[in-house]
Image 1 (cartoon, one colour):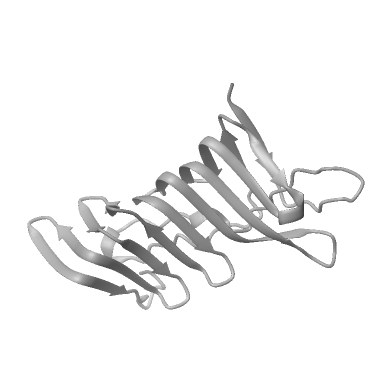
Image 2: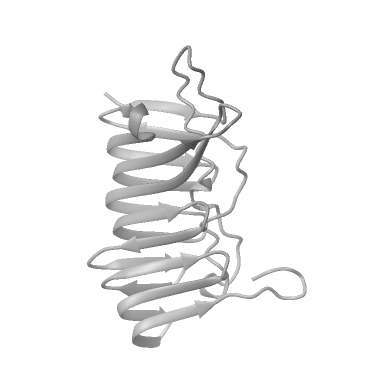
Length: 198
């Protein structure tokens, strides 16, 4: 049986459970169109007021004492045009003084796939640190596909939103058409033009 929840930004009241995984973690916002590898990945930004829908074949567990929500079994988190797929999703939250909650970290474990309008990233595990705006995708073969462009590595892919930087570690390859670039570590820095585009 498939279970799903529509999650909104709501406070948790002491009198009852309001399943409010206000996943302001901004599940890896969509990327604008254009030349795929030349633009920033933009996994960290988006409309934080837009609800996230969580689907899981085996349900969603709330570990109130540990401040964690866990979605298991073919888990999927959807916000707008962005979808995160994994065997398991874990949302770590903290309680705010006003009674609400803030998600500070999202873990995706097992057969991870992160899909936006322009890119799809693959790995075994992913961690998104919301406050630092850092995404780390790990696995034996991590891969980012954007149109005809592809970046692969055998350790991890990182995206540092505040630094406007992406890093592929471990026998990293970048492929565009018939051009190839290989190094143990590849780093890409993003910048905007006069129009504010990447």
